[in-house]
Image 1 (cartoon, rainbow, N blue to C red):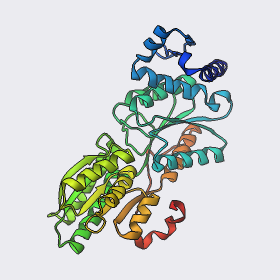
Image 2 (image 1 turned 90 degrees about the vertical axis):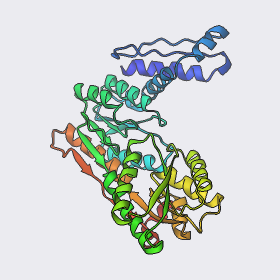
Image 3 (image 1 turned 90 degrees about the horizontal axis):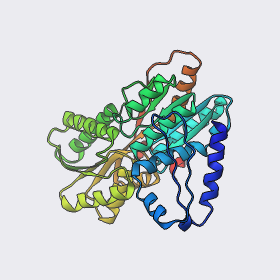
Image 4 (image 1 turned 60 degrees about the vertical axis):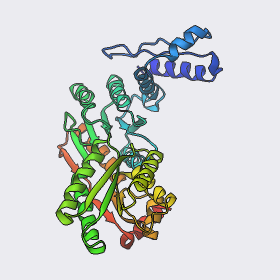
Length: 365
């Protein structure tokens, strides 16, 4: 397997170095997936090129998963413990910190770790897991995008004897361990904090807008928990609108700007994730809304720290993301060593305000 992967990587790299206008290539993964099929097409024929460009998006995602494996240094090393981390993306600081924690823990244990970046596409995650099963990695770690859609791939890994550790998003399937924050409970905490703020500063009444990521299971939990905590402490506060930032900073900013424009009475924004919070802070600045709107949200960033300092951000739920990655790797290694590992590995959160911001400043300059 290692020799085939190295040969494929060599061929593909040489293809990419040529004139792109003269290249087409296709890499087929035979179903059921039991090995990589070494079919690579390299042609200057225009008709053939155009036909290749019309291949489905799913096919392209499969190619991406295969390339990630073929070019990975993990393929080259057939000794020692080999772990694979299937990530959501590597743009958001939240996910890069999980990856950093996992990498540090793997290095400390003398294990090898390869990271697959799904670029926010759930189909790519499924393809990657299937490919890692064929590569016979020892364990798979995954931050799932679609917790239901990924279950068949997780089950396939478990059936192949490969333990799966879920990070953050709750899969509730055949994964051996679940690592992360209780998102609903943490959201209840920030909802209660928001309600207390409304009672203290706004006489118990407020119009609230939400910038969420409606396709994210985790961030929908954060919205549900927020509603519950808010209702418990400030029953007269109302969520007047919810917009979809799609877990992308620029999209979240545009959605937050539209939210502010359409709801001039808005007093509070609740942002369910890092891109939503950064986008909401940027929207507040661009709309000149810093005096009338307070932002409550998830995950510190340099923008969130600035907002806490200038008062436009009231509180941020801060997760110990590196501890998530570290705990996931340690859990996987313990399972491989035959040790008993608790299925639920909970990582606590901190509600960060200006009053307790100091310990985090250096990290988010």
